[in-house]
Structures are given as C-alpha cells and as structure tokens.
Length: 130
Image 1 (tube, rainbow, N blue to C red):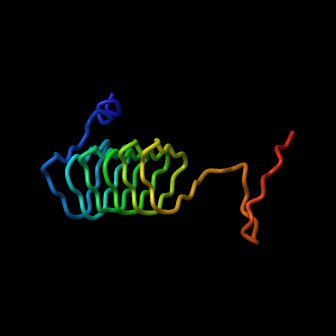
Image 2: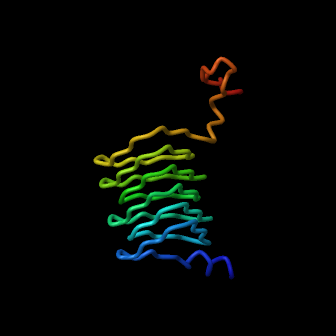
C-alpha cells in the first residue's frame, strides 16, 4: 500500500552537500554532508561517517556514525556508533552507545513506567503489583 512505499522513500544529503536551515523530512534522512539548523523527521535520521550536523534533531530513531553538535530528541531510539561524536543533550526512550563513541552532554530517558519521580526529586523504584 501507500504506507509501504512511503517508508522506502529517503532523503540524502550527499558528502559534498551543505544544507542550512530547517529541514523537515517524511521518511528516512541520511546525512553524509553538512547540515546546520534544525532537522525533523517522522522516521529515522542517519548521520553517516562523513556527516557533520550542527543542528537539533527530532526523529523517531537517530543513528549517528559521524558528528552531531546539537540536541537530539528521539521518540524511540538513539544509537551512537563507534566513530560517533555527539555534543549536546539527549532525550530518548532507548539508547545504544558503541565502544569508541564520544558523547558529551546529558541524557534523559522517557517512558520509564517502573520509576516514578517523587516531589523531592529522588527517583523511587515502584514495586510491581501482583
């Protein structure tokens, strides 16, 4: 159907390309060049090994093999591969950081139902209800 076709569509910023501004993409975005500004995708944003991004990224899944300077907000998963360099704050549900990756910033995980925030800012583990 239409949805299956839309998933295959991807936008590529080539190795020698430079994009400045706000980029909103339906489907997957792969960055092998340079992007400055803001990146929004309803699917996956992949930063290739040669990719350099100076931008805030919002997507379902973010996979970094290159360099990102900016905040990452992913609703599902963020993955930093072995040669990744990420400087900025991260909000994600699930995170993978391979050995060798450089991550400088804070990380907030969302969707943790088994922990509840108490008013005194101490996280208390909820006991499972049997």
